[in-house]
Length: 138
Image (cartoon, rainbow, N blue to C red; front, side, top):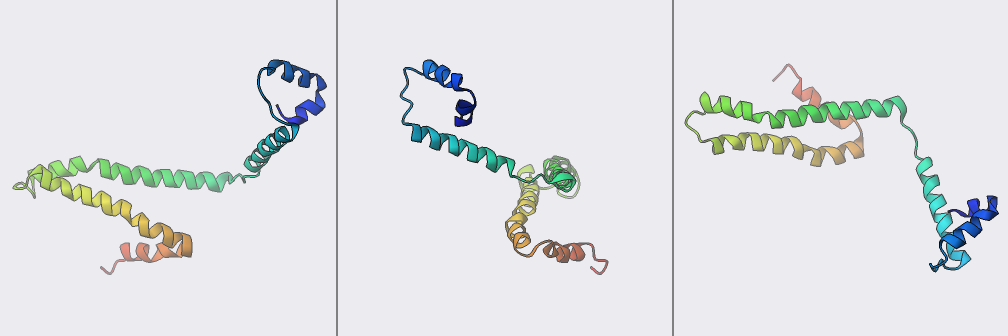
């Protein structure tokens, strides 16, 4: 119960004291500091900006990328079956599974370098690898 409730409703003070008569509630200054701290937390939560449509588009785009990324990694069993019956017929399943393991490792470990670079330089870091990847002059 906050100090504002006590000021607005004096009968609540009596109810509070009767409900907690067996507990040591501390000095009034301690009660005030606890109430001020909880009011500060409420204000900090309500000051957080709402991103609107742009924020929800970022959430959607990120979800789509993660869906594709983890979907590809999880579907490697299909590729492994194809490799074991065609190109890598003479290899064991354990040896073929290293291909998928390394693909997922390199796919996800790129964020160790890309994340800090993106934070430092912004979206222009992404353009060079994209241009190289989709360039017709390979």
